Length: 217
Image (cartoon, rainbow, N blue to C red; front, top):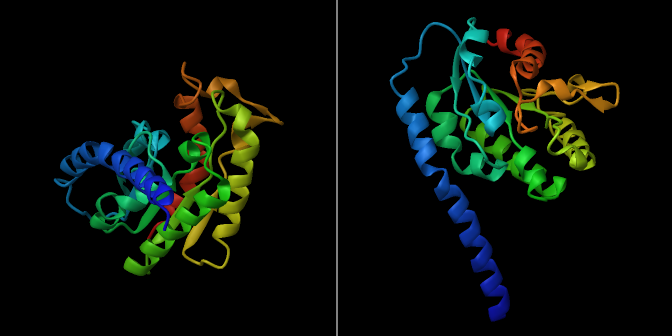
């Protein structure tokens, strides 16, 4: 192999390693916060993914029917979830897991096809380790800050929906269309940064996700 190619591979490997190491402290904090929670009689549901999950402050009280564990970590990509899949999902032995990733991947200009390849690895890892686990993929959401990338997000969502086909334990939930007014974005659903949702935005997510949460056995 030419030295130039070796250098490029080394460079990108270090970028990936740095990104994952930057989440190590946050993951440890999540583990510290949740490790004291004992598994009760209720079905256990893990919500994980990037900041749209991490910032859902009232997610536990919204779903009293189940034991909710929020392992969201802000700024993460799907590859980061794959790297920490044991610590953020498998260690808690959930009955169902809801995953929100891909938002930051597309904003970082990763191609939808590449993101789907990582999602596939996530699913294959979970299916291998926990064949009985119900998995729910949450579509990418629209936002004010990233509306100019809407075409890429739509392509990602289309591929995500196709990814779950012929996977009986995997479901797909669309949160894109329900956050629009016709073809226009509902701008009242976001906080000042134009990216993250306010309580009205989470009200919509709650309505869409609740049937799958309460169906957990």
